[in-house]
Each structure stands twice: as structure tokens, then as C-alpha cells.
Length: 140
Image 1: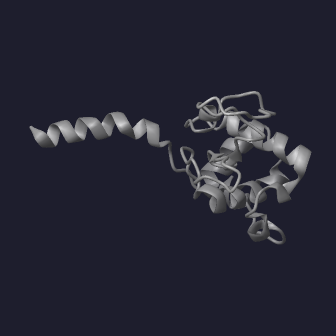
Image 2: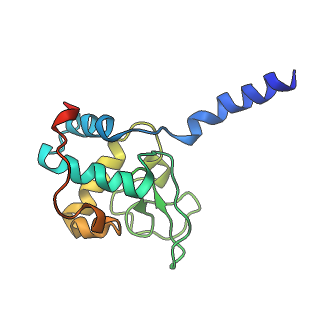
């Protein structure tokens, strides 16, 4: 009986953990969302280094008390509103929890906004993704 209760608890907790994508599944979903194909290798590299392709990740507290959310680790001081009501510029006009779901649409749209305002170097992991990257073509 204990085993059943634990199994049931894990089943209910699993959706809260988000999902783990891979390079190709992320590239395909981003392409379906209209992200230019010539950007996909960079986005997948950033996701790999920021979250290991996991959608449900909340990063540890940063030096300024903020946290980073989702597959692209988007910061809550500037881009999304944290659930605790802490001040945020909330440039993406959404809850940070919206960046933790299995549906990556909000994460992609917000990440594109970050890119348009700050460039690729907004991500600290950019140093791993700047330069020649493996082709993404084998994913399609």
C-alpha cells in the first residue's frame, strides 16, 4: 500500500517538474513557433547550458536576489513577475510560472524579446555558444 501511495504522489508531482527536451525536439518546436532556422543552433546551445533542456528549472538566487526561470533561464527582475510579488520590470508581461510549463511558447516569446533588447550576450552561457556550432539540419 505504501508503494502505491508513493507512486501516486510521484505521478501528481511529475507535471510540476516540467519536461526535459533534447536539442532536436527543442529546435523543431521553436521552428514551429516561427523562430528563424538560422538561430536554432544558438538557441539550443543556450538551452543546453542554461537548463540542460529542462522546462521546469528555477535557478538559484542571483547576487541581487533575483532568480532565473525555465528552459532559457529568464531573469525575474527584468522579464517576468515572480509569484512572491517582488518588484519586477516584467518586460515580457507574464508570470514567471508561465516560463516553467511544458508548453514553451511563453519561454520562446520572452527569450526572443530578451534577444531583441540585449542580444545573445544577455545569457551568461553565451560564451559556449558564440562561434561555430554543429548544424541543426539533422533535426529536420
